[in-house]
Image (cartoon, rainbow, N blue to C red):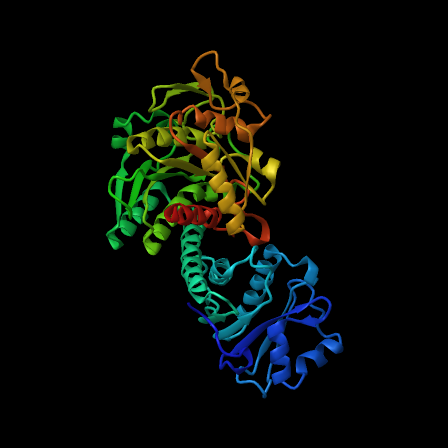
Length: 495
């Protein structure tokens, strides 16, 4: 898709459609007033009749405006002027793109009144336009055999007004890359588990590295994983006929000696719970349990696309968690790659078992920062719902960077405590510690477990169980937290 800033008068632009805003007070935005004047007052007459109220997110397409080269105008409601926020503006933009996607409109000129520059400057304006256009036009990669609906026609977006065209152009480029990366995550996560296996993820990583010289991929098969003594990872995978894979995807865009940012992704391509079997309702959604792995692959594609001057390493522990006769049992003890022993009291707490070995593997890179991404706990969904990802860790500066990135990207996270008291819940009579600590503070005790394998490394943990996908009628991957991680990497590259 092509993005650019419009510079001459909006009403004079020869595009398929103009997109302008209306407030609830039936007040036209500044650019909409110019369009209204050029059309002989047609917009004001429509508002005077009460045909459009400007309610937030509402849209109305007006056609056959013969006085304008564009011939069509889309009115977009922004709600009350005094209550306009960046979040509300983004929602209105998403509603506009959704409405346009139902038409064969191929080019638009966008002029939505926006909040103050301190909330949405020209860079973030451009980034939001490109990112939201891409994410809204995303079509789920279904395997239906019927005739596919036509792809959205929208291919060109002119947006404005802006004071700093260069900043907006940079925003367009970054926003388009973020939308493309999120689409990578969504495509992988939406695939059924009989297609997206650990081996499939490994082959995707290899194919990605083959296409881009700045990326390298190394895949450890089961024998190599065993040589690395990843006993906790192997304990999870032993109940499945699908062999595990450990994927190392590396991007070098900075100085060769630069300490890397290491992203660690949970790649459980399907999670039955193992012997601690999950309830059948919504178990099909456990194909999304590799969303952390998909986000890592997405972020490496983004780093390559934007040529970020960073060294980024992606580590993915890819397994299935199944309940056959060889499956690990509650009470079994596994020895992690770090040498610490774990009593596995609940086989459905498998994500932390594969992540602990992956986090230990990260040490060999002497990382500047380690961030793991995992659909780890239902407890995090109970605590935060589906609005915020949970973030915990041992480095307040790193946690702060992730929180700030989430605010800027409108992909928010919320910090939960991670103090030594929670470790008491993981005590075991038979091993160094157990893999679960009861229902109380379940998201925190899961992170506490991971913290036992990250001492000495700057580390943060993102629990995205409530944000990476949605169920119900709109079932599918959301692409989160790729926007948060993208902003984190972009700002880290700038520093």
